[in-house]
Length: 393
Image (cartoon, rainbow, N blue to C red; front, side):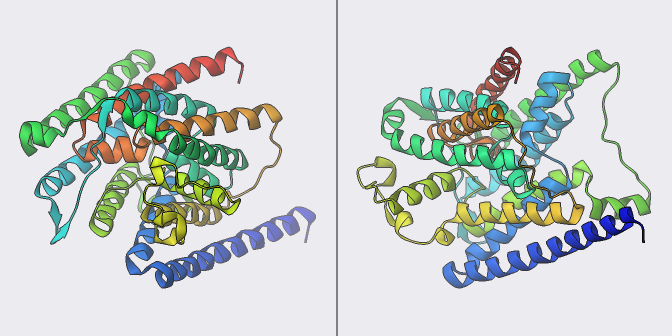
């Protein structure tokens, strides 16, 4: 056997071992969550696993779609996000207006519109550029083996704790929650959301056609062999990604009684780490209810879903054979990633959430603040892009 074939054989064995270990490890951890916190949280962790696999296999991310539009006027990612919002809203609005799902109480994420939300989302948008990801992306990319994103995640957690520490000031500022279904009814509120989604889609089509002379499409092998190959080798069809993410949020609503969120868990993890060092957080208004600090994170809905997303991404990366920790990171990138993470964490905490809790789940909850968050965070992305170019990052 030649040397290249031996190396390939060893690499294949490593990939096979990684797949087995990641899957078995996930099963064991889900079982531990079930034993510690019960079936509900175990099921939510499995929803998280599904989300992580979808992100990696579908090569999908919120940040990537925004960057593609800002830098290249490629609107495919933004159009996909608008379709996700439209479908989720059509599904959620009547359910949340009724307040129950299959007999269980459900509530949405309707955040106040004010200075805190606008500034926080703008800061989050800059952080997306500097950190290289968003809230869901930091979990999926870290799980897929990006060392750089692990650094962003560390900053994200630190920034979330910082935001929790300062939260009393930001919550003292005026803000008004506006629920579209309360203001216009289910049909009227959904109509407003669908019109905005359609406007964004048309806008991307217009500028994309002007830039490229055509509308960009997702390349896809439509043969049966191609479909099966893509199922196990990634590049899932965008329609599958859209439907799976909407389904994941619906399952979260069904099981947890509220939509999908991400960043509150980072504040919890960082705060628990502080208490281990002996820090007293009892004076923080954010932790008026100290119960989450005193028990396992497996009892926290957001935490178990985040763990699931990380593990699902790890499994997918192992299946694809793309998991590889690259430690060759320059100091400049380390610093920028940390700063980006701090912006992401602090911004999301004061803005009532991130691209998932405030944007995806917020808009799906008929909260007008979700659209305000989108506009402000997008402007932050544009500003962050300009800063990166100016700083030659």
